[in-house]
Length: 98
Image (cartoon, rainbow, N blue to C red; front, top):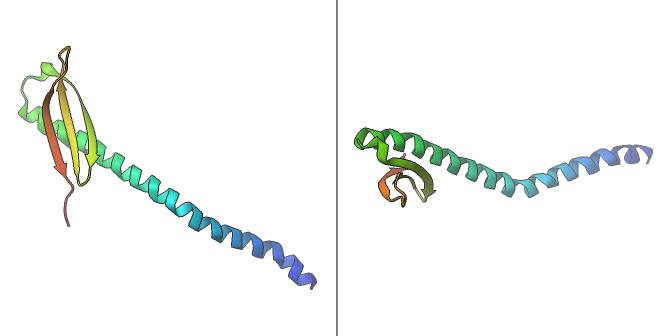
């Protein structure tokens, strides 16, 4: 009986540690998905800027850009340097299929 009481804390700790895995998994999945979306957005910025600057010659007119991911497409949108900015280019980057 004394042995049972000496092992009881270890059993309770291991059971509670296993129970936490199922509670944490949805959170880790959400964080992983957000990280992958951020990575895709950064890649869209990188490649989109290279593609756009190669094709667009009026570099003084570029006011900035933003990138976002929608579905399987990451987009990099460039806007003008005017007082009222307008979109001057959009580079869509599809997710590669394997």
